[in-house]
Amino acid sequence: MEDLRIGVIGIGLRSSLALAAHRPGRGSVVTALCDIDPVALKQQAAVFDARILTEDYRELLRRDDVDAVIVMTPDDTHERIAIDCLRAGKPVYLEKPLAITVEGCDAILRAARDTGTRLYVGHNMRHMGVVRLMRDIIQKGVIGEPKTVWVRHFVAYGGDYYFKDWHADRTRTTGLLLQKAAHDLDVIHWLAGGYTTRVNAFGDLMVYGDLPRRAPETPRPDGWLKEFDWPPTARRDLHHVIDVEDVSVMNMRLDNGVIAAYQQCHFSPDYVRNYTVIGTEGRLENFGDGPGDTVKVWNTGPTGYRDDCDIAYRVPQATGSHGGADAQIIGEFCRFVREGGVTDTSPVAARMSVAAGYMATMSLRDGGAPYDVPALDPGLTAYFDAGQP
Image (cartoon, rainbow, N blue to C red; front, top):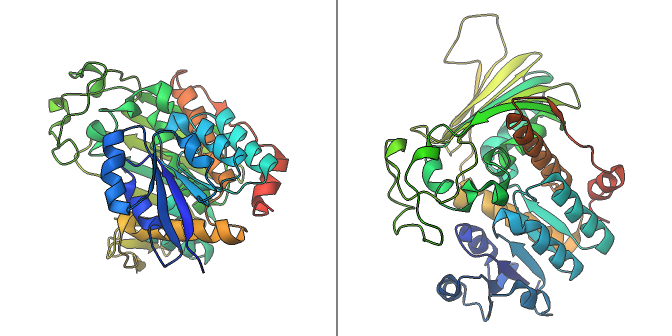
């Protein structure tokens, strides 16, 4: 089997994904790189030994020696670049979120169907051991039929990762209830077996709005990825535009009747996600998401709280970035490019997570008014559910 020749557009903080795709002699090799930063392009070229380097992604799309493309550019560029890839006939891996508006998502899905070019969206949490374990527990009926899902997301590094660059600008992301939550909303849908139809939300810019900012066109300071300030109010050198919320809560009703809640805070002292799923016969909750951590189940009762639970499941061992999920998702992408068919990650599911986050953002900026999630064209749903034949 010859290696797929992969081009990477955008080679910044998610370079670990490109590294997962660079497996010479084992199915895929990164042969082309594109980035608007010539310094980053030169540095990464040495890592991959890539011979094709360009600052214009359209040049990469014109090449016959590039079989598929991974897009890891900022969110507001996804719609334009993805559609250009699809129209050029290049199977494309698009890093989440699919787009920053519902309309943008639907435009990408239509382009994939109309061109017949394969589209894959990188919701890598579906390949994380803890998520697959929780889904397996639910599907086996250990807690009965799921009825409600609660997710709390504590983002200790939020002030550094999301308020020192373009993520803080709503014209680039819509908001962090879409950008950061897209993974979690997708997991809620996957665990609950349905999609959100109605939302309401509250949120605010509580901490980072009044802190010192950098002047426009000023780069982030060196060492920002390793040197984090504490407490949050001590942070400096924030992005010159900050108009997204640093705390948000949203409620969801799904099309199968499940009610869910999601909470996100970007100034907590710890970084952790916490999932709770309650069914007709029990409750599960994850305690950490790394190897050796546990998912606990309580399915006898009623009792007071019991820390020992009824069943404890250990999260499986894994190696590599994102708990081994990056390697798994790249493996699925390469298989999909070669063979087509249904994948665990779904462009429809990716659209629905963006739609939930987008409408929730509209709600929180409208005083918490409830918003309905626009339905997806049934023809598009059928096309992608069938594996993009």
